[in-house]
Image (cartoon, rainbow, N blue to C red):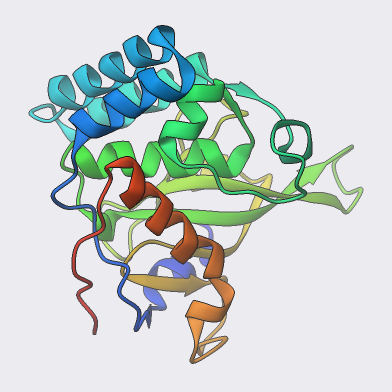
Length: 229
């Protein structure tokens, strides 16, 4: 297991904000909004997404990860935010991502995260994770910012990586091209290989996350109360 991934899993910074886990979601509302905003084809796609959640809810976690990862990697086309939204950095809700059928790495990771939580995967096992992804020839030192979803069987375990660029779900030890910077969910923030919190006010860093959760609530995906440490 790569030490940086392990440190990221073990270092927890409690997020003192009313973010919470997904609870009391109104998927009927989301399906109605999909049809009204984007047309019947998107309404049908959201209905299939709901079926995916229902079908995988009773499955083993490994099957949930595989099905959800495959669904979004097949249904959504990668495209830069500036081309989709006219902004350099925009975090789309799952409804927006399914409506456009395109998104960048953040949108893939966010949609997979929310879907897995709705399918019953514990929030504490999931981390939306910013990484530096190696580019070019080995040893070139070139990298670019990227986002993936990491699943941890336990806090100190080696995570499995769900990535829109690599279709196979692999353990972190087989993703030597990725270096974790920080990961987060609705319960906390995990910072690279640091030994102390990078900030006592993670809400400042995660303002886009807070805004996203509110927009998801407007779409019918409602965040519940936060459990802080």
